[in-house]
Image (tube, rainbow, N blue to C red; front, side, top):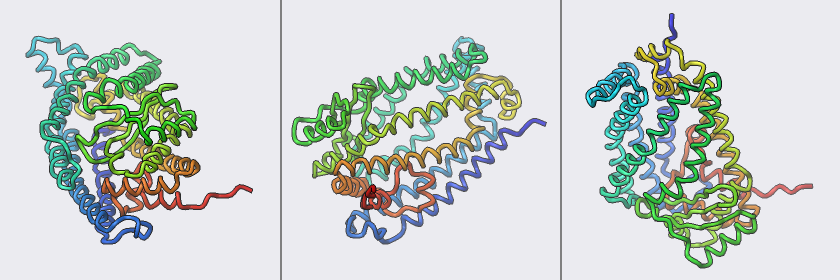
Length: 424
């Protein structure tokens, strides 16, 4: 008797939905607490706490509805055989256009076009509500409806432009790969990721945001001095107009080898009135670079990608797998999709492990900035970002351990305030 892959996948998805809903309920209860954590008393103003509490509860209530609708749709799509039905319909669509439905590349692209259309339609109400109701109600949304839909159209256009060559290449590699298929797929994805990391900030990101050089002044001088002291090869320092879409703030770095760039959100500069706070945030980010966190993360992703492709090669010709989900043919892309569903349990474990590592990296980057003498400024900067972004002040320990890639503010402040250990 064939293993019931589809039933097992749907069953696990529902099980995980109940588990994560339990964690969400714990977090919702934490968000409803009427007082600040003792560590934040006198640090966060009561006004900011009440605003943060209201914002977090609004997002939490919305999250319950979104997740319930998502699990219903995802389970129904698998259980009632919507995927194989849609695969056949995409073939009929090609025939109606006078194209060859036996051409797997054409057939796959038609299938993906329909899936993209469906996902855009079903996700649109949630995106609109999140942006123009919740984010707007709490003063974060700066987008117009026109800008929202213009961004969406740009995203679709990029998917249409970039997607087909990538999909076609994957199909050809799988069809021709032979015994070294996993290596070829991994090599292709490695090259693709490097190319995308190179062209995204230069060609794609500017389609959505305006990047301008940080003006000469004390802030620029301090950042350049800090980068120079750490031998960070800073080539360009940008400000991005994040405020055109949201008042949330951030900062990040990108670039390879001797061509590094730092990007500051204009909202970060506006919110942190003290320039030392901005420099402290950059010191934290430079800590990730100096401690090789980015490289370690990249290597980990590459290893996981290779292992996933290795696992895929073991089941890609399994008739039982395809038939369990209702397919009477074995298309390459469908095989990859089904395989991803079957390893969902492992993906949850890996995600949990990566979050543990990420939180450890955050503590290390904070400690790095502290050793550079930015403890007070970093502490003030983290508090300011927590306040201005109305981030959750009370967090459930189980929820944060499972979901958070960054430690809660209470834990980060406690680590910064901890006296340095003196070496004998």
